[in-house]
Amino acid sequence: MSGAQPIVIYPPAEDGGRRVRAADHFLGMAYGLLDIVEFLRLAGLEDVDEDWVRQSPLIEWRGGGPEVWQH
Image (tube, rainbow, N blue to C red):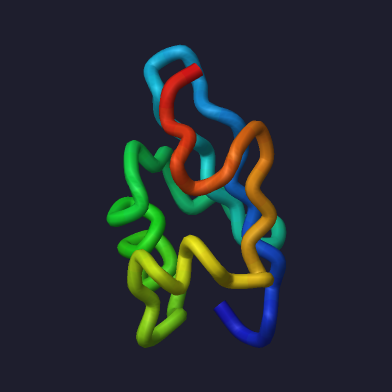
């Protein structure tokens, strides 16, 4: 992932998972912050951790923030 691409975390699905997208790329279905961290690391972001995911202005949380995992 090059540059500062917007990252979108979608509202929880019925199973509690949230779709994760960076720019035009679907990264996966996250069931917790650690999943998001791993997706972003695989996409090329280094030094990403749970605190970064909670606070980053690059992430747009839809349908609730980082504490919302149930629909």
